[in-house]
Length: 280
Image 1: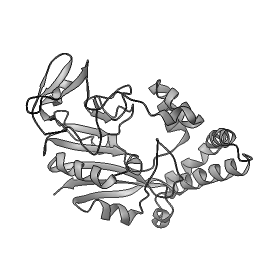
Image 2: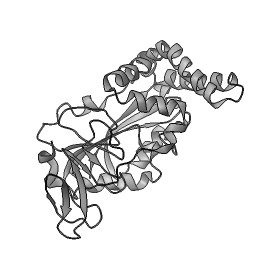
Image 3: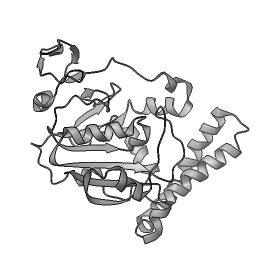
Image 4: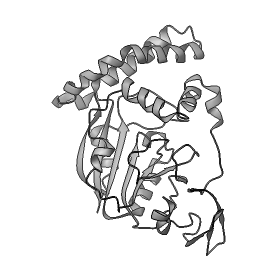
């Protein structure tokens, strides 16, 4: 995989050209060394967030992510995405194109997609900060960023980096939340209305925007949190355990969004949206 995109990489500190050995990537300009472990390049120190150990749900997520088949089996069973998926959006993009998935986690959208994340999880190709992407200007054909912009403390900077690395006419696929409770990963900062999405990405040419997760998912998310809080007796562990229970209990209702997401007013109370645009 690395051979496919290494020419597009640059030193994130000085934008210098990189040379590669079996153990490192070295900047030819500032001489910075970046660890290479097999096909993964580390532009950040190897790390895991310490907050995960103090949270029952985050700890459970961390455990499940060690088994992608189990994680995504539960993810698609307990939730329902009614909009156009990233996989569908890039269906016509040739495999010769450079497609980068920012904050990818363990998800493999397609075998040729380059995964970027701050954590050295399974299936991640580049360990890097989304506010300082190690890709040359105008070098990437497609950028994907799913359910992550709310977790970026400096979301505007990430948007600017996406614009910088995309080729003119290059495609961006984003999904963001609207009616959604706080969910740490490890933190949570922003929400967008459908008009807010258009304004936030106004430096791109909008091609498509729509409901990603519908109003039923927004309802079941809020209801599970309310019930778990009301029945927790102020116990954080019990509240998180009940959230898990109610998530499973309400999961079948989410499939109502197959129909409700088509309603014109559904965007007023949708859980979140997807956006497809191109660089001007």
